[in-house]
Length: 90
Image 1 (cartoon, rainbow, N blue to C red):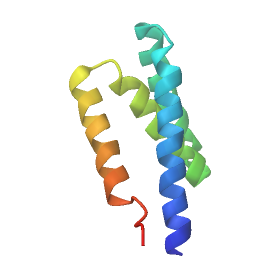
Image 2 (spheres, rainbow, N blue to C red):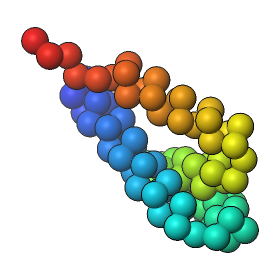
Image 3 (cartoon, rainbow, N blue to C red):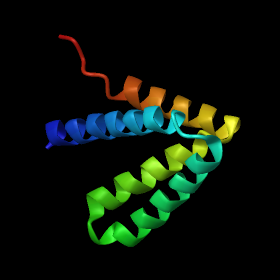
C-alpha cells in the first residue's frame, strides 16, 4: 500500500512538472485561460476521481505561473513534497 501511495505521489509531481513546462511556453493571457478551463474541467470531471484531481492541480499550476507569489508558494510546496517522500537510501 505504501509503495502505491509513493508511486502516486511521484507521478503527480512529474505530471505537475510537465504541465509547468508546457505552461511556460504559452503566452501569459492564454496560460490563465487554460488554467481556469482546466480547473472547471476538473471540477466537472470529478466523476472520474483521479483524472479530475490531476486536472484541477494542473489548472492551479497554470494559474500560479501568472502570479509570482503563487509561483513561489507552488515551488516551495513541490520541494517540501520531494524532500518528505524522497526514498531512503539504505
